[in-house]
Image 1 (cartoon, rainbow, N blue to C red):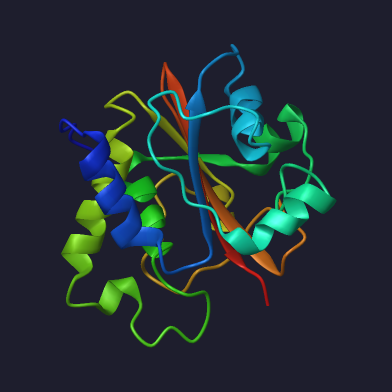
Image 2 (cartoon, rainbow, N blue to C red; image 1 turned 120 degrees about the vertical axis):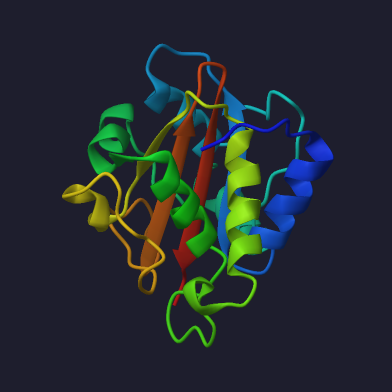
Length: 191
């Protein structure tokens, strides 16, 4: 993945074009622990703010669950060990494909990303979002397709879940870790 200079406005525009219309979670947080999984948990629990002050995406329908059940809702309360156990490393290119795939619905998508005329633009937006983390970022996913390969083609078929981190029907996540910050991007199927 090439690194470009990404500013707040460029990043937010790409994030909104990519994920605003689907049930997703997209937040970033600082690296405060040696163990990146502790930092990812803090983002899931919403106990840290974006270190750059940039936008996040969360569905308002989850707000009641955050107040009633737990701050991490719709995520389960997980330990750092559980988090590390539930994700597998993937390449930067696979991460771009995964994030781009979050722009589509889970089932019965009339126009999945792989078949869209704007496929290249969707992939460019995913690259812009991930460029924030720099060329040395590491990527993990909960996708079961990464259990046997670190470069699965995640645009080749419809979204599939993996290791579940919520009580929803299915969820699929991407974790990005750099030296200074983490990104947590998740897609949900609430049916």
